[in-house]
Image 1: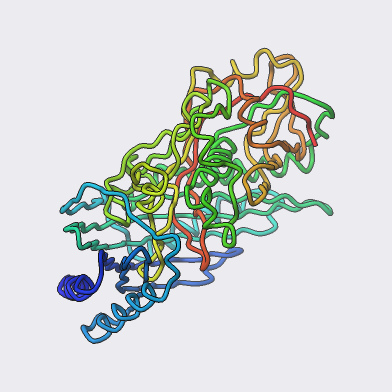
Image 2 (image 1 turned 180 degrees about the vertical axis):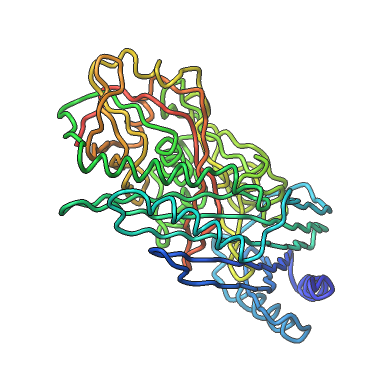
Length: 465
């Protein structure tokens, strides 16, 4: 994997810098796209390259190349050094001191990825299941397997290599009847091999979604008006944890670095230890969950991964840090630095962000609600760039009357502020579920694999919009 080139790059850079790191990366992927009854596209992706970051007198320079030859590597070292030396150093950048590791880690699949024939057979089987159902307007499936290899070196002595296979599946389903249509999509993803397919139960889920969308069109009622109690399902809980906790707790956002790229944060450093929600609210970001889509053992700055509790029993407990923000805020990196590819700068990212479970069953969450909504899944959502005001519109949603889940209701909307949301949660379910997603951030945009998740939760006295 061109380790000699990476070592040459580090040696060349370190002669003229205070600190340097090399990230050598290769990615191979195979994907199939199936659309409305036929195979639309088969693609193969093979990318490799190397990037370098250097620190000179408080300024950072970054450069990359996909030509792994000594002359080219020397050129990008020069480019990174020139970039660092050309910067304004009024606010010098520093890195937190971290433990140095020299190790290899590998995710070993239980079952190898199959050839294209078996993948086509899977997609055709899913399509045959849907073909027997009513009012299918459009269906779209995408499956991809990939293997990513990395080598990380820095001038402090870090030497970390990894091999990570992963598998993902996405479907979009549209149901149409008379002049109305309903749409839903789902994404599945794990690190590992082909064994993940059986755990996803794709045919059962897509059949369920098709049935629910048909029923929404033909049987769905209008939601009640006024203030009611809400129970939201794990997919929405996970989205809430990701969007209104994970993103605003990214320390680069908090410090304003992302304001021109992906938004701001209503959170400030002074809010550490501030009560944001009720005592039943705990939100976690944990890259160490085995087989998770956001799994890693070391981040892209060589820091060992571990579980982070962002909100602990309603209180802001920690932010997501890389080495730069760790130093800036007087703490350490917590291994939250990731890059989507070799030619992208590592920035602060989530991994598997979820709300921790409580001790209630779904029935117990509903049993003392006289009038409310159970929102099992969402059809759309939005949130402002400071992650403060947000809205979730239900897809599969039911009326709760006298403690019982009743008929389907159409598109109830939960619109609320982040503090208002967390302060309205009075009970948390015990059954946690996780959902794969591709999280976008940065400019140019970087999409990285994550899980969102949590249990069902109950919110009291919410205005339906």
